Length: 454
Image (cartoon, rainbow, N blue to C red; front, side, top):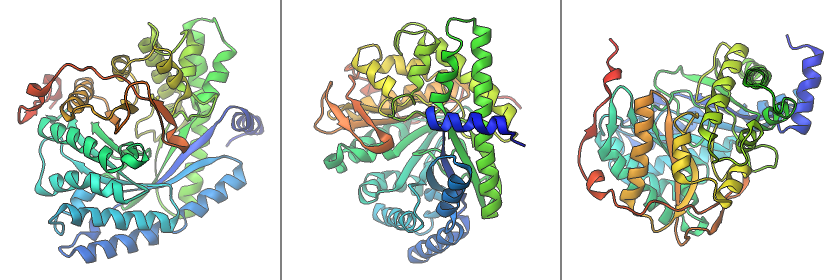
């Protein structure tokens, strides 16, 4: 049970330190919606999601009101649509029409985002996988709340370089189709290596085929809480620093556990996992970069940044797993540029580069996230950036991702406004040397030797 002292402490974290539950995400399996008739598939999808998710948003609001805990987003994730549409979709337009159905459903039940317009192609692509991937620019330009993800590699399978090359082109086409909104479509598109089946965060959430028919996953967040705790131990030893982060992560995760149990009970849907990622927002005082500065850096990006982030990520996980038996998803520290005021400041000051961000992804939860680059960047260059990030995930047996936004019509130094939780970002420079010959090879990069564990 949570005692009165914990209640008071939690209230303070909510009121003064930007503690919130970032999302309740309802995962829904659509495997029973498969049919050879496209109209039937869309009708089944509509009926199933509206039936299961009808009370999700209201339940979230009720929990917010009763417990005084802000729940920022209510979301849905579904089975990768490449699997659901494989039997009925013959064209990119067919797949995009499913995206429009998903968008309609998301608006009807009132969720912020719906994830799962996805394909899993770490070893190869089926015809349906390739069709869905090629439909992504059209789908994201015609919808508002649908998010798309593609898993391009894994530590067991290697990296599908044919898909990596294709995704460089898809990012550019998505940017072009949504250029009137500063290429916003790319903010709803992410590629993965080792994508988890139970991630509640967008844009990468999908409902894995290993999951049950419906599941409740909760993502918590508290960068401001961690920073405030560290201010009280400024200058003390690494041991004190680590203990403080662990204890704080424990408290934050307990809040998420409470919300998850309540949502599960009220919706009569099994509880899946707590994702205890530190997910920043553009709000002042809600920044992972500011935590790194509190640890002892003049600015994020300074020498020592990767070590400080590794320490933070590890202690967050150690504290979180003590608070819940079911920790999953990504769990750790996100380092998006546009969604973190401290990161934006670091880029503007010249302390943070794309290469430094890539180094940091070796030790954090995800990867290159919400980074704006010039709109005239070549597709092969984007593919090369993706390949580098996939390799980090594959070799280190961790999840890595790329959510990069080539903003059409913008150049290095320009500022791009995405709005809301997506924030704003300066356009960052990209290495101009060519990787064309590398990206244009066909096939896949094989799995590393340590993948053979049987």
